[in-house]
Image (cartoon, rainbow, N blue to C red; front, side, top):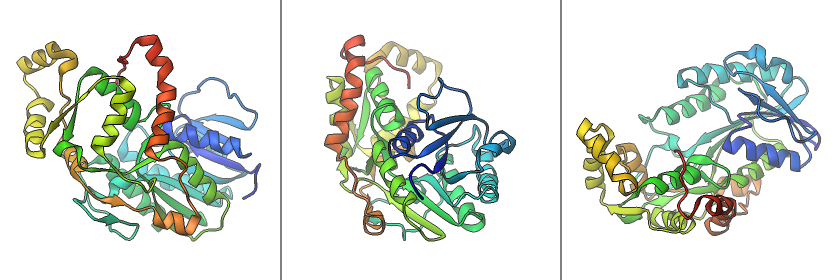
Length: 336
């Protein structure tokens, strides 16, 4: 692909999608961004906003001709619709002449292995999490049925960075209203990727000719402990917001509080910011895992070199958070 070609982006107003859109525009591409509700008017001449719905192809069909590639970052309102909606999207992309289909997936499709190195050769495992189930099913249907000539699946690590996302704003919100559990003292492994580095690997894929179907793990290649990551979030908040608990105790605590009785709900409300947020079993398994998700294939095949380490990445979060802290005080009051 050449600069000034058009790229169609689904979910372009979301946390990851919006950063991809910014990078595409910065690098000279024209972008058509599919959103469900019209945001503020497009602020760049290279950006066209398309209001539509993945489950209703007629709402986006006219925006596909002329696009050379698609970055699929969206999900529908119902996981049960996503697989067929994506299959139909890929069919219509092929009919419109789209040459590349980049699907943003997740390392959650591997489950939560206790340890070891996870590569693209590691088989995904069935999990109970609907999000991971849906992402894997989309991968499979694209590999089996997509008529687009090049399909690349990006299995993203824990995406953090300024401007949203569960692993930054989501956790900061919880920490502002209570405390997070450091399972087993937080000695599990966090496999992170800064949101801006996702845009970088998208650029690499757009400018090369690839295989008909490829999968890449996307992490920064420098795993850290959850304890260390939580510590960086606490620095941004300006106070301690974690409590250590071994995995067995965390499971007992989670069962007690995730479906509490009325008296327990009242007690939780009275505890206010002292409340320790419970974890379900799947989350506990994730925080206990010491597995490392390798990005060596992306590095070797694409020349992918993430810009951000956790230290530099958290600086971008701090800079984005400081105005809020000045306005609201040292402990942000945000909804999760």
